[in-house]
Amino acid sequence: MGQLKPWQIILFVAAIGVLGVSLWFSLKTDRERPSDHVMFVDVTTGELVRARITRSMFMPEVRPDGAAVLWPVFKDEDSGDWLINPRHLPQVGEQTEGQINAEHIDLTTGRVRPANTSPKRMSLSSRS
Image 1: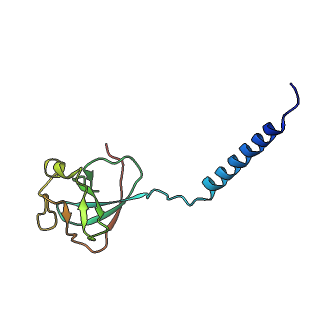
Image 2 (image 1 turned 135 degrees about the horizontal axis):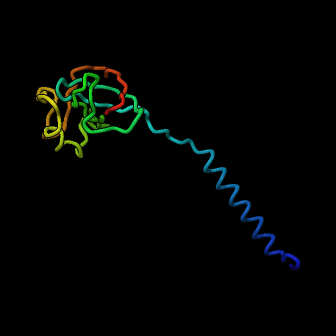
Image 3 (image 1 turned 90 degrees about the horizontal axis):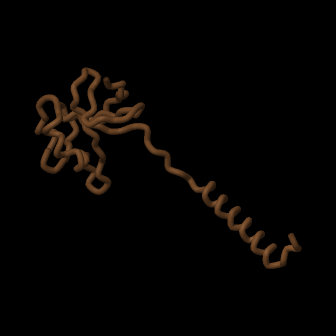
């Protein structure tokens, strides 16, 4: 190996500088952490339920009493309405155990009029 040329030294120093700057930018950025909770609606009662995610979710989720009636919802930022995910909406009527409460759940738009103002809390237990 021979002597390093000046342009090679400059290139090496520039590469180290670029690496340092990119590491600094990637490490200083605040990262959003995914939520460990999911909002559901009990389509038979219209109640909102906030559940902690401890395992993979199934659609529909089961209540503690075993009825599969919990579907994920989100709050529309523009209108402030609670909505069932349009991707799940076709299955709500087919896969729900029990009668859907039409007073609180609109199956054509997915709009939910919650029966409670603050969501109940529950944990998703293991499902067999």
